[in-house]
Length: 336
Image 1 (cartoon, rainbow, N blue to C red):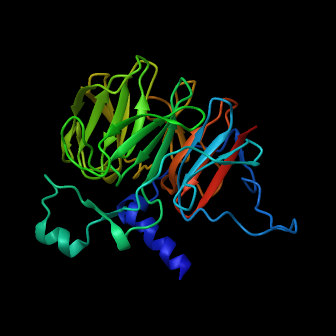
Image 2 (cartoon, rainbow, N blue to C red):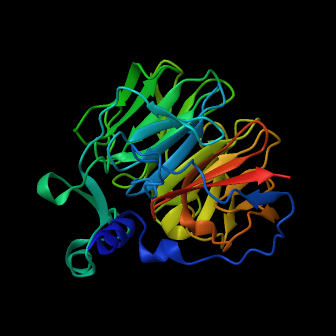
C-alpha cells in the first residue's frame, strides 16, 4: 500500500511526459556516489532502524555554514544535516500546505482544457491532499538566507540562517495572477543585482521579477510552445551576467532570457527537467548532466544516469552534489 501511495504521489507532481530520459553523451569524469547519505537512523538500542521516512524529497540546499537542508513531504519538512550525514534537527518556522499539486485527469482535460490558455495542473486540498505536500523547493541566497517555496500554499518564504521568517512573497492560500498573488509557484533564483526571479508555474505561465525587498518589478511569459512561452516553468537559475535559465518542463527544454525577460535562445531535447543547479564556475546541472552555458553536456553523475529523476538539488562549495528524488531518497555525489 505504501509503495503504491508513493508511486501515485510521484506521478502527481512528475507526469509521464517528464519521466522520459533524455540521452546524455557526457561521460562520468569527476564524481562518485556516497553509498548511503545521510547517516542511517538508529533506534533507542543503538541498532539500525531502517531508512529515513521522507515520503518524497523535493529539494536540497546548502547553507552558508556548509550544512545541508533536505526538503521533503514527511513530518518536519525541512531537516538540517552536517555534510557527513549527521542530523542537526528540524529547520525553520514555516508550516507547509497540505494541498497536493497534480495533473488534470485526461478525460477532464480533454473535455474542458484548452492547452493554449489553461494549465494542465490543479491543486487538491483537504482529505485528498497529503502531509506537507506544499514543500516544493528550497534555495539559499548569496547572503545565506533560506527561501522555501510552498506551491499549493501560494507563497514563498524568506528565512534567516536560523530559520526565522523575514519576508513572504505571495498571499497565503490565495491564488491569482496579479502582483501580490501566485498560482502554484515552483522556484526562486537570485540575480547578481539582488533581484528575485520566481517561476509561477503550475497554475500560471509566467516568470516574475521582484526587488531584493520584495517589490514587484515585472514579469514575462505566456502559455504555449513557442519561443518565450511556457507550459510549465518549473525551475530557474541565473548566471553571473544576469541571464535567466528556465526549465520549461512539459516542453522538455531550457529557455534563456536576458535580465529584463527578453527571450534569447533555448536548449531543446533536454528532457523534462525538474532540477537546475548553477555552479560557481558558471555551469548548470540539468538533473544528472552538467552543461556549459551553451547547453553542451560536459559530464554526468554516475548511477542510472537519468536526468529527470532529480526534483531538486544543490552543490556545495567543494563541488559535492546533492540530489533529491521523489522516490523518497537523497543522493550525494563527491568530487574526486
